[in-house]
Image 1 (cartoon, rainbow, N blue to C red):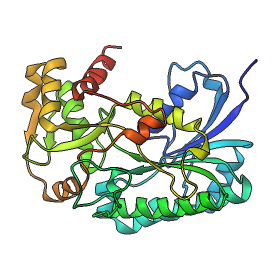
Image 2 (image 1 turned 90 degrees about the vertical axis):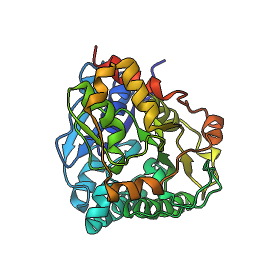
Image 3 (image 1 turned 60 degrees about the vertical axis):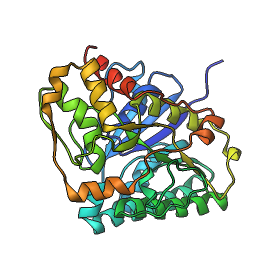
Length: 325
């Protein structure tokens, strides 16, 4: 018996995670997607069902476009909210962050509760909701105290979505993402962008500036393939696995030092690639980076059946191998 058709919206579909998730879903016949971004979304290449997707370019901060977007995906089965202004960009432009990271999320979810009550909403939050002081390993019981605009606005939207779920208006999960390494494509304005850049740029014969001079500095990261797999698993989670007013999941990852990533680059990319790395303090970026957690307890994610990466060098290998395909 064929699986029932499921219509899904992916916002921020011009970034990294949106296209990767779209590529995964478009290899299964039951999924029909509407991809949207402020730039033209692109249908992933090589998928089995490229005719199962619509692309809508538009401004998701505008009510008229939100209405058009949701109407295009009826009957709507789920929405992944991936759009946003990243960490350094939010710090540089507070008003834009409010508009995109807070007001557009409220606008979208309010529209959904009126047109599609009870719809599955998967919201991409961030480890940036946490701030110092923090324990060596963050657990579900640690209170978020963001030290940056991005984290503060993500947490604002989290609280709103929690309440919408508690009221039964939507069926939501909030995913506090680790940093995805290695992101293909061009550098982003995020403070954490160097974690991908220090692998991606040297493999392309280009320089990458690491914004803090401390190779022991640790970051919480995951592979793109792991992120994509876990998103599909969350899509199918029973909404009752979490309390109605506590919808966040600290998405699983691993704690890796800058040195461990450099070692992975040397092992799988070649020792000669290390010459493209330049270590130079960027005070603004370093402040943001040092406010974030360095490690998380993955036990809740494991209980929910999510996949966990184990070695930093495996993330480097995944990217280097992708260049050979």
